[in-house]
Length: 193
Image (spheres, rainbow, N blue to C red):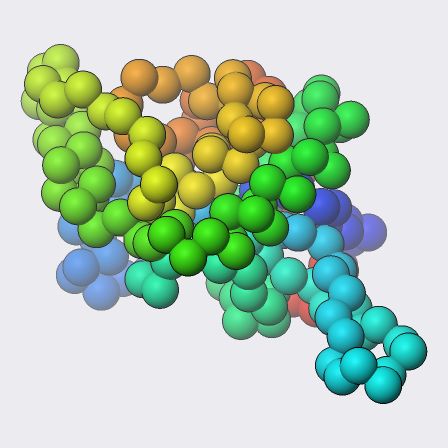
């Protein structure tokens, strides 16, 4: 294995490389990328108040069926991902991470199933047919995975991470960002932290 290590605020985009029928249709419709989350670094947790030592665990920020949350990176070990890193704006990373913690702590930050129906699917259909998007996308407190990651960069002072008028999709981070570069691709594992 090479010497690559994940850094806080690295964006990880899951690669859809499965061969089941649903995955093949999804790959045809939306491309090879299916989910996006952000590496937060090793966050400290205090297990109990009498303990003086802080335990550190590699965590990620994502929005999935249970809403926007912080989760252990180990839950994603074995998944094929592309790792993206900011080319510039490094000084704003602490603020992006702070905004991720705030958003994950917000009880109103649900997963936005309606966004998939109202914006993501129509965007994919319009792109396949070469038509303009008929609906005007707007940001709101609920987030699909790509909205959540983009939102914390916007709140963290990097509003131009993605140059889109429509809803962001996971593949947009790989293909449409001038501020991100691909730094690694492979299977997530403990050796990366």
